[in-house]
Image 1 (cartoon, rainbow, N blue to C red):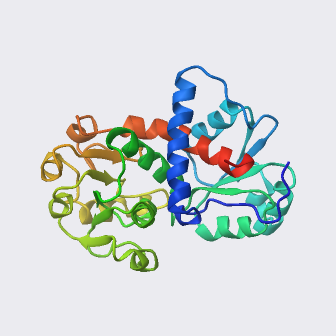
Image 2 (spheres, rainbow, N blue to C red):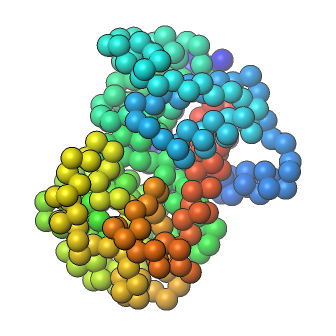
Length: 306
């Protein structure tokens, strides 16, 4: 078990350089090829990942747990109901204890401060599996998917349609690291956090018309209108986002070769029409699968190095 006093963490895309992220994506593509070819690759034999879930999950849990198994390691599922963390133990104490027993910790929670405080007191790498502020692991999968289908995303145009939420924030960070233009179409009152948007001003524009944002775009992305913890706002948000569905008219404004992505789960008839998510532009199933491969590359890099 590594006892590096200064482990690398992955709490945000900005924790890695452009060169490191690019290398990670190409490694993910290679690990995918290796798996599909039936070749065994187990660099994490004897290593353990602790997965701490305060928010429920399908793709995050399955991809990390399966990824560790395929890399020869083991994953522990820890919900807030099963641990002292859910009974009021200080995050700092949980970090000190857990990181003496495992080789890496993945946390999926609400407050971004939780993963930052945990990482500050951890002896092993900490991965942000999702917070209310950021979802960097999903962006690794999205960028891998674009790379596989269309090549380098640098210089391309991406349209984000919907809420200025954690996914939007991570796309803003991705625009900085990968060098693409980001058009953000969101209603008044649902803009992304200025602290994340302002450093990316050279790459991002906020628009109010989804079709204007999608004009000529190489990639169109959306997410649910009400994320976990916002269910009580569902009706209000449905009204605010009524004109922000990614439908055939939005995709028609994009480049003819444009891709459509969604981190899932999706609500057909709300943020996206069935004709788009199930149509020829959609790569959402490749995108979902690539959570596995991109995170395997990340785990390999953080635990045993390149």
